[in-house]
Image (cartoon, rainbow, N blue to C red):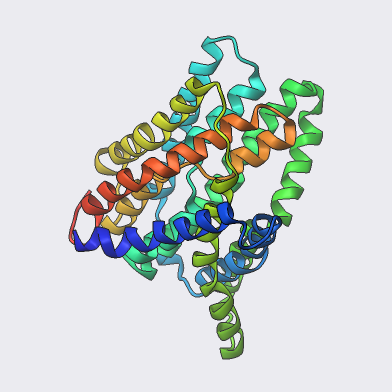
Length: 314
């Protein structure tokens, strides 16, 4: 019980602080955008860069973890896609629903939660999970949407645009740059470590408060069937598939296995909502899935922390 309280309570307490601040309008109308930009463009990149710049190849050479995480995401995406297409939904809508069902909130929730539960040794697997989500999953969804809305002739142009966009994404560029520094064995000066350390320390609390501010703006859609379908796939099927893969299919250290399952159990991240909003494909559905999955994750994540916390074996 102490593990749950010590790890989960601070996490959701910060989200609650952000939610109350949003409802009371304590930080102003533009707080969500401003704080989100600070986290995405400054704090999280600093944290990811420093973590990757100080690791060794032996620490991240975990092909079993990469395969298990990738296949769990792919299986949930394909399941959601098949369920939506069976109802003769548009390819773009099915893609966004599949993205939401398999898109864990690894950046904003995964980093602080894993740091609290497993310590700093869990940062490398979290960063790899973020890259899988931000690069492979997000890019694949965009290509499917473009094929549906623009036509197959645009795939090559879209792929090139997506690739350039990913390279400009600070959540991708920062850990890649850190990995290059680590590969070249360049020691970071003390002043740089202090800078990235101070800036990166703001990532977790600001990210959690931002989630609360975002949820305070949410409005539930009248079409709750797809919302609950996304929530069920995200909170239950995703961690179940991850457990099966790390327990019986692939080999990896216990810490990496536990991190893979815990990250899979996280609620829906904000990425699907941003994509739905960009293409105007029922963003209320993605927003509702984020809201409900985050609220329910208070219970589901608590259970996962109790099962996967220190001393447990997945």
